[in-house]
Image (cartoon, rainbow, N blue to C red; front, top):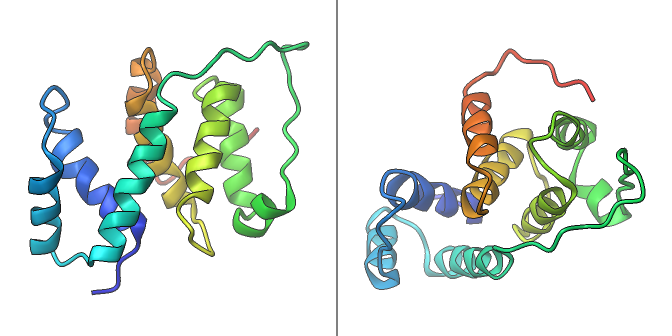
Length: 158
């Protein structure tokens, strides 16, 4: 089976976190189910490391902004892995208020932590959804993003 960390994360999100957010499944049973689903030890370990990194950043400090319209300049490591459509989508989410500067940076951090050479627009949508799900006070943005996940005909303008 050809899988990557995001495949494991999506499986966990769809089977554990999304349906039963109040229950906290134990890691051993999740690992067992992931093995039964055909995921490798390496990808499972990387996925749990990714989730640990997300959990460590659950509470984000508020950024003090000098302006209401901050400018985000992407560095070379981000430019190399995020094509124009991906960067446009992130800016779109920022401009419509779904991602504030703190959450945008957290999304970028988690995207780069995927260790994937190529990050797609679909990957970004899933990571944004997982980040918003994990952040307190982001329920409305999460619901909006969840609706957006299934809207394939939308054009994103920032």
